[in-house]
Amino acid sequence: MRAGVLQDQIRASSFGATNRQRIAEATLLSFQIPLPPLPEQRRIATILDHADSLRTKRRQVLTHLDSLIESVFRDMFAEVPATSTVAAEASLIRTGPFGSQLLHSEFVDEGIAVLGLDNVVGNKFRWAERRFITPEKYEKLTRYTVNHGDVLISIMGTTGRCVVVPDDIPTAINTKHICAITPETERLNPEFLRAAFLWHPDSLAHLRRQTKGSIMDGLNMGIIKAMPIPVPPLSTQTEFAVRLARIESEHETTHAVANHDDELFTSLQSRAFRGDL
Image 1 (cartoon, rainbow, N blue to C red):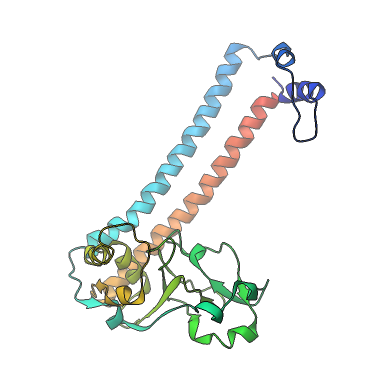
Image 2: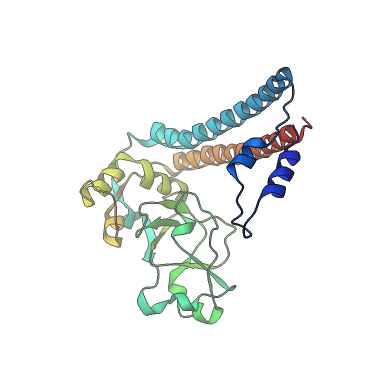
């Protein structure tokens, strides 16, 4: 049937204030709903089922790609002992400004970006809420500047999330909720360090000991500096980073196609109820 016919009946029979309109039960039950022949209904259902199946399979591929990165890391490095620490392999470790150094009221609509929890919470760097400070304020906070290739770790709120700052991020600082690590890149690949923090058994065991096995409700600089990490040959770390980039590229492509699948399914549903399918 054409959905518009039923919608017209509902609009014509509704009463009450805007956004709180009602319709009498008896009136609703009296509506005539024309239906296409049963073979036509089955044909439409088959098309929608097929489209929905494609969506489901695409989402399964995305889930597989998400787990594949961890599997690749574990295959390559799980047996490599953690013989060093974050502090020994980083040229700089710092959190963001505390207290009166940076007030929420000092955020502006444009200027120098301020990175926080929402940028790291998914373990992939994402622009979410945009926060900025003025260049004048930044001059007082330059020690908190975040560099391309820094590894950011959430230490308050949703803790233990970890990302690498991409190359296209403009000048920025981090908040007190984030610890920023600048690795010694002649020994440590940033993508490898992020993966070690998330998946290396020795690193994870360190975090569990520090938090006594409970949900991590807070990390600190001392815990992060002391975290044990492996330092395999840089060429091997780079190989992992290359494989990671390939998987993430495939993930982005598949995600775009999955979004298109969702749009197609919505369009098919709309056409079906308009009688155009």
